[in-house]
Image (cartoon, rainbow, N blue to C red; front, top):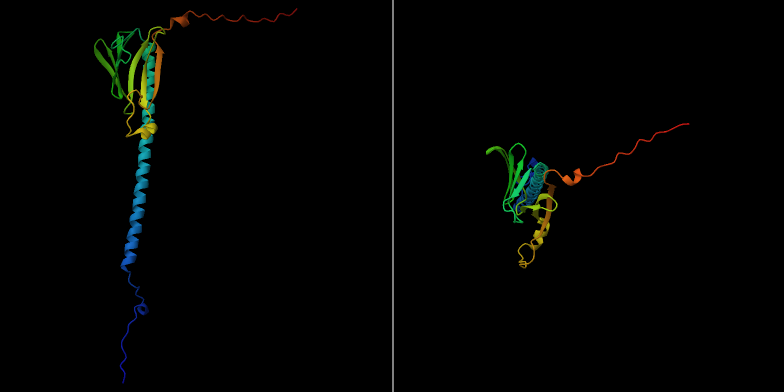
Length: 205
C-alpha cells in the first residue's frame, strides 16, 4: 500500500507568502531616495526664506539710514570730516542746533550713528550692509553738499569670477551708489522769488 505524504499549503490557511530579500532592499532604496529628496527640498525652502527675510531686514535698515543721514545733513550748522583732505573719510561729525552733535562712523560693513549733547550720549544706532561692502564719506565744497558713497559687491557676477585672479588694475565686481544732501540751509533757493500771478477780473459793461 502506497503511503500518502502530508503536504500543507500555506495559501490554503490564509497565511501570506514571505517577502524576499530583494524586495526589502528595493523598498529601503526607494524610501532613502524619497527621504533625501524631501530633506533637499526642505533645506532649499528654509534657505530661501532666510535670504528673503535678510533682504527685507536690510532694506528696512537702509531706508531708515537714508532718512536719518539726509535729515542730519540738512539740519547741520557745522560739518567736518575726519580729515578734510581725505576722499575716503570714515568719520563724519555734524553739529546741529541746541549743542547737539551727531557722529557717523564706518567700521567694515557697519555704520554707527551716535547722538550726543554736551559730551553725554543720548542715542546710538547701528546699520548693516552686505558683507564685503565698502563705504566712505565725502564733501563737495562747491555745491555745499556732503554724502556717503557705498560700494556693494555683486553676488551674481562674483560667482563667475570666483577662484580666478584678476589684473591689479581691474576693479572688483561691485555696484556703487551714493547719498548726498545739501548742508544746512540752501541759500541759493532763498534768493528765488516766485511772482504771484495777478488775479483776473471780469469787467462787464
